[in-house]
Length: 200
Image (cartoon, rainbow, N blue to C red; front, side):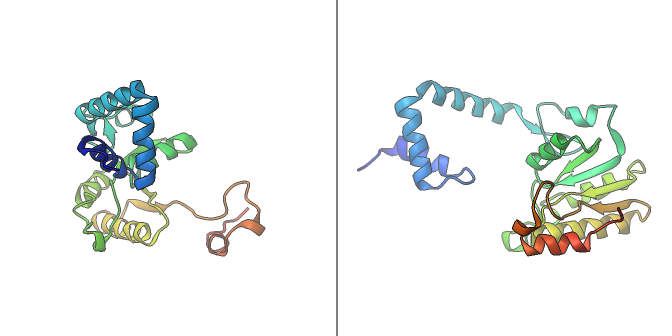
């Protein structure tokens, strides 16, 4: 069955979303056009509006409608703490934890030479300049615990220390999640938790 150029274009566009394969893209397209045309119009307008109005914060690089995001503009935040994350989604998770009251720098990626992502693509120079501004006391590296995330964390730590040895660089701890039972936790997580153990 031929779907036509417009419907094929919609399906191809939906396939660009993370986690959406060809079949899911078809289901979403058919659902929107068959059962929720109002939702489709709302989604289309919201996407256009976001693309036109949302940019990056001049200080931390996160997504915002203003030149400086609300977090950077908040005088209640501790400017001596700078948390480095890979994405605005990671920043949101840390904010929702209510465990951090400093500022952020969003990389929009992580080092991955095979994918053509180097220090320039994650704006490492800008991050290091911010970390060495004389205000930042500690850089908290909150990249993911993947080989690329670990390499990025190491690279950031070395770059910050070489620019300003007085700035402390820390990394999120890894280990057994709260509420987890050891019996059902994978051995790599247990091994890392044992290595990162602390005094009680």
